[in-house]
Amino acid sequence: MGAAPRLPSAPHELSRARRYGVLAICCMSLLIVGLDNTIVNVALPSIGRELHTGVSGLQWTIDAYTLVLASLLMLSGSTADRLGRKRTFQTGLVLFGLGSLACSLAPNLGLLILFRALQAVGGSMLNPVAMSIITNTFLEPRERAQAIGLWGAVVGLSMGLGPVLGGVLVTSVGWRSIFWINVPIALTACVLTARFVPESRAPRPRRFDPMGQLCVAVLLGCLTFGTIEGPSLGWASPAIVAVFAAAVAALVGLLLYEPRRREPLLELAFFRSVPFSGATLIAVAAFASLGGFLFLNTLYLQDGRHLSAFRAGLDTLPMAAMTIVLAPLSGWLVGRRGSRPSLVVAGLGLTVSAAMLTAISGTTSFTWLFVSYVLFGIGFGMVNAPITNTAVSGMPKEQAGVAAGVASTSRQIGQTLGVAVLGTMAVSAIGGGSASHLAQASHAGWWTIVGCGLAILLLGIVTTTRFALASAKRVAASFADGELHARQAVAEAAS
Image (cartoon, rainbow, N blue to C red; front, top):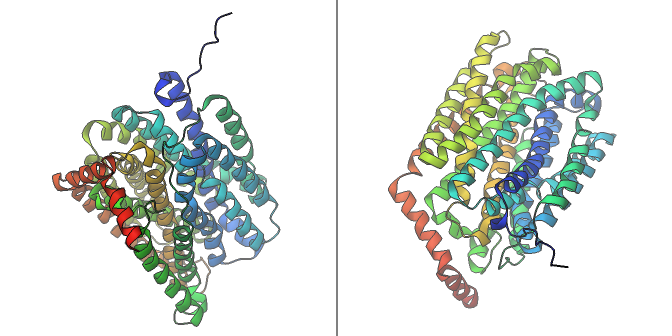
């Protein structure tokens, strides 16, 4: 008998159909993470009533997830490069499914927050690792940009399904049911991954960096805790001053310690690339806008306008629909015209939408809201593809997990800060925690999103100049010829 035909094992050997099959499986992870995000936002008022918590408790329900996720994303990316992306991806699916099931059974706010953190541990192994799988599967730049555009469309799909599906579930079954939907999707994705996704690793995986990981966790945790609890404990209270001081110390530790390691958790040399640094800032601004929008708008529609969860979901559907339509278009545009057109449209869309929402009151017409939601969807739909494409383009493939991890971390940091900062602004404005006057109290938050939109517009122009592109080439060359690691080795030995 002849030898059995060899199955493709490396990404470059996969057929076009197999490549897009891998993309579809990876998109399933994005779907459950995106669904979880939007569904939980819709359920916040119901969670608050049943578990007897105010706005700060609802902030922690969101930020417990995004905070742990942001802290672990870079570690998960480098771990996947070392142990195998497929194996790490499957582990993440299992943990996310178990965390979702536990959330549905949580008897009080404290355990719900704890189980949300467990979800996040699994979630940290999903999207950045999936993006690394996609990057190593789609090797041709134009096809990769288009694949990332389709990936971004799933964000819009989850936004569209999340509020409506969440509204139906919360209204008919209760808020606990919103976590059940993650379980069968995670299980299906895990089985399909085992069957169709090839294993891949970095040729030279990075070393574990416990000190860098600790500094990242302390920085993000203390910054978030201080922002959310500042209004209730007092901004000048010893606890708040101490946590902000710890955040500053962690940041200083990162800046001093990481450059002295040959293979740091956070590769600061990436930030010498103007497009990469710009993509990081754009991700923070865009996802701070998204996190703030979902949080404030949900409370405004349900507690301020007294709409049902289902009606609130329907009203925000125009935003999600525009994201679904424009995300793949943005990927197509990035593949042919570069990042600037998409980023300019994104900045304008978010800026004008948020400017309109600075004028809302308890009686604002739904036509006005509809137009603002459409514009927000246009802005957010256009921004995701250029962020991801810029983050991974020009980087060596062995750094794909780390680069994708930095981009994903920036998104989660942005969303964490959006909920923490804008929610805190609202709490301070209404003097306690009741959301009944949130329309007026939210105006400062909407003006903050205007600033984020303008920042995206400016960075979209700056990061696509000739000077910026030349800086990206220099950074890529330093990785390719090994000079960067040689310099870092000298610095490490000198220390």
